[in-house]
Image (tube, rainbow, N blue to C red):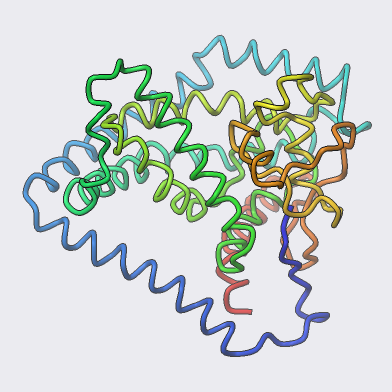
Length: 333
């Protein structure tokens, strides 16, 4: 859960100008650096060819993702049905409807997430691959080039998961990054689709750091995207309204109980359970909350956040837009 409590404008005293200026400078510096690096990469003919090829595949990839992940994927319907059954039999939050307002609103984030992952993200990965090969190639672990494919992937997965843990801690402690991450934490009715309630800027920061281990072990962008897709199933499960801590597996994997504690609105749960796939980093660094039978309410303590309300579809679209703009408005508050 968030370490930063953002009070409403009426309740909060004005932030010191140097702090706000520093926040804005950090964001603009990051954006400016990306623009300059992209402009530099654009001068390379091989990079332009890769981008052109990638851009031409984006529409097909979007169609493939929408059909393979949802509409034409029997696994999706089977797993979703099983999750709904478990939510009915062993709910973490009693009284939460399966077809809740929170779930319906999270469904609106899916097209935004799909467009980002099928078009902008692959293009961004091409840029990261180019920059890594050009400037960070000395990080490549040459000694494992003869390893089997699976061994390299497992090493990349383990190192990548640790770096995600690090970035997750950073996003909770740096206010300018927290505002974007808070969009995900705002869900009061955790459900199967909550993993899609992620601001694209939040995703961008994670991927900037998280793909480096796979480049280090000489894995392709295709492998990176495939692992992201596989992880979706796990993250969908532990965001669901299920009362389970996976028994002994909780010492290895993130569980619905441990991640619910991470989303908790109760102060005693703040800064706990940062893992993405594995819980081992939280145990190693003392951020694991060790009471495994607590299922708290979730959300963020910010009355200015545009929470979803009512049932009117147009108002839900307006709320989605407001939630997308929330981090930018918070930066200037």
